[in-house]
Length: 246
Image (cartoon, rainbow, N blue to C red; front, side, top):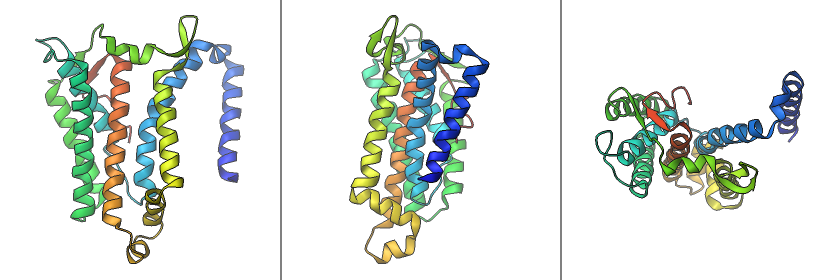
């Protein structure tokens, strides 16, 4: 608790110093935009935390974000640039691909015993190559799609903005569900136990392979969700989106 309080105090001091050097830092527009950025980062960071708490590592989150956005852009843009399908088809398809990536990596790691560093590093490079192939080395623009409303709109309007943008709302929901799962469910206790001592957890009856696999599915799923938000925020996707996010 002391360590977390120290980090919070450091964050407050940093905000004070930045605000003193530039008064625009405290403007409504900047704070809302900052909230959107923090929310997008936090969504997939929460997913990665499941893997890390469970004793693993996931280097492919940035590539999952990228391929999710690229799939949405390719499927939802008009014929010629894309397939001309609706967002109701593009978004579930992209999220399904993200979950399948997590499932595949989880099977390789938990089922076949391949080290997570090697598996997710390979996944990072393979997915980046697939994204580059889908967008043909260029960018795919979402144009004036209503999909952009996910970023521009929210709850509790104030002037031309919203006090609670949808990305921040999504983050708060994800954070609440993740906190509940980790601290108030059997699954969460098992994730902590697996990361703390894998062998002791296995001897105590925990299916550590299943827990490990699920953490990678959760990480990829939330990276995919973050990819949806990033695609709406950027408005155009390329294979470079998500680079170095690991």
